[in-house]
Length: 216
Image (tube, rainbow, N blue to C red; front, top):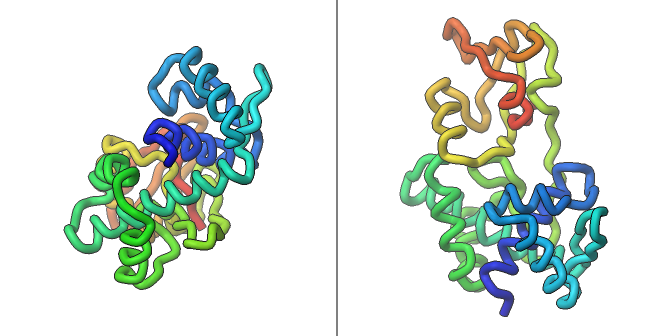
């Protein structure tokens, strides 16, 4: 069975590559995402490469092999179904479930995950708008434009958030923003957007945070 560390690495590689048009994940990106030193990542890449889970070229980056991709989807399937289960059954907020799922995803069996999926009615997306991989390894293509690319005067619906840190999600909640929320773009400036939810007077959102929100 793959170790917790291996599962975390392949999951992170998958997430990084999927957000940059399937281009290889850089060592620095992995080190930042996993909170480890670049040298630690380089050492782990050799281990994963020997296990035929990744294709790694120094200075060029790393991509998952078919075996690595299958493992990453299994981990993401567990993680995202656990998140949704915690939201729907225990009524945890979307800002609380990510860390809980990080701890639980390595301990649950595929049988239990299948039962959770059936209990939830075979959902397609988790509480953050991320697509939930199916048992056969298929996964829906998530669509949506980055909020920072929307022009002033447009009304859009939030469909996904790319940063699932507790602080960022709590900030969105305080502003009345969640998956499905309709936002009106009041104005667009060089470093921020002015947004409105419903009839509220509006709030400012920095461009770097707007890039982490996908809308339709």
